[in-house]
Length: 200
Ligand SMILES: [Zn+2]
Image 1: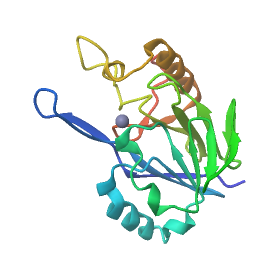
Image 2 (image 1 turned 30 degrees about the horizontal axis):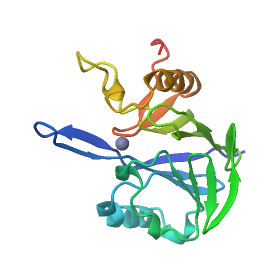
Image 3 (image 1 turned 135 degrees about the vertical axis):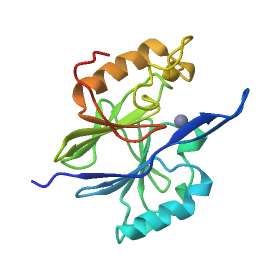
Image 4 (image 1 turned 90 degrees about the vertical axis):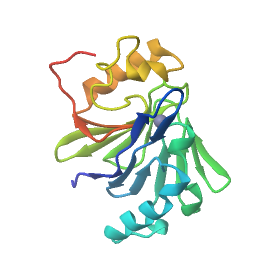
């Protein structure tokens, strides 16, 4: 059985530029398995980056089978029009064109390496993608995790908490992913290794 490959096309970022002014964009990730998937689609300005990155892997937009949107924040859902034929997964919905094919409960299996689970907290419809790779399980989590060590760097509140709709629920989801995953692609940072010595 061949495992999947995870390629971060664009690591997300978030930086403050003075009071109430932030520049941010979500991570965009390509999954190569039996199905070809994208997790999140950045902002509209990422159109050329997505097209050229796919081209580097000899892919055209029509080769993308599935697009997973981890949540509906605007810096994660640009460029949907590039993939009119793909299956889109968001919240509990699996939709292709105007056809709602499924409302999944526990988990949605894309293929033998890739599945989607509910990880609410950041918002109540947030989802994460679990991918079996040669290096272990990679979780693409959207803003469930902002970036590596997103609990370290602020005195008032942890970075992820600032944006959380339900902190308690998000903490539960974070702990679950922390136990399952060997690597995490967070919403606003590059892929990082899960330090199992730390308990979340
Ligand atoms: Zn975000």
